[in-house]
Picture 1 (cartoon, rainbow over the protein chains, first blue to last red):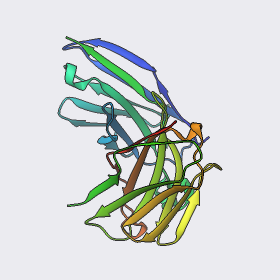
Picture 2: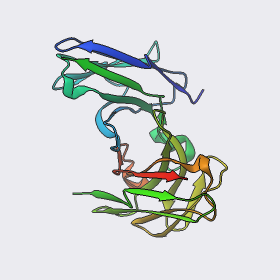
Picture 3: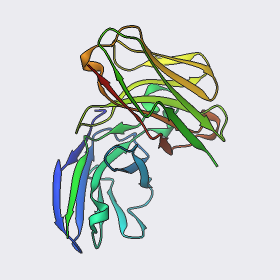
Picture 4: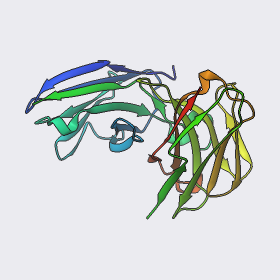
Length: 117
Length: 115
């Protein structure tokens, strides 16, 4: 019930296309859903995050879509660029249990995105 | 603004040698601190987390230990390294419980190779 399942494991997209990465969770107590971007040899960087009170959040070319009833959320990268090539991780946590282990972020296994020029 | 540092950036150590990796956070007080390990091409495995000085919780039994001697300092240690300890070690921080902050930020990482 603590798992976050992420798909696909890898994704190849042409420059200018839309990249879509999906995540699913089981625990309905999760109330914070961030996405991280990681370039090779670097630490993951917080990209965008959403809470269940909204169905969509957009920041530039990056959009999170959230479906509470389906317990799914996804990252959409519009007009994908070669510079977007990286590994993307979704995550979830329960802020009500902050400070306990249940409040820690649960990460998906990651998606390696390659954007071809 | 807050910054997180890790050192060393890279480390090559023989099997059986000791290990000490350091993480420091500036610009915030009483943060939650985390140690993760990432094997090559793999996901993020949470090793330890700390909600305050001297308070360490272990997520996975292993050859490693952690300590938090100062509010801003988190140390990952081993007495005798194993080949399986090789990986990319990441430190992260979140605002303390009184702020109920959700955002978690990672450091630049330490690449450890055990030979």
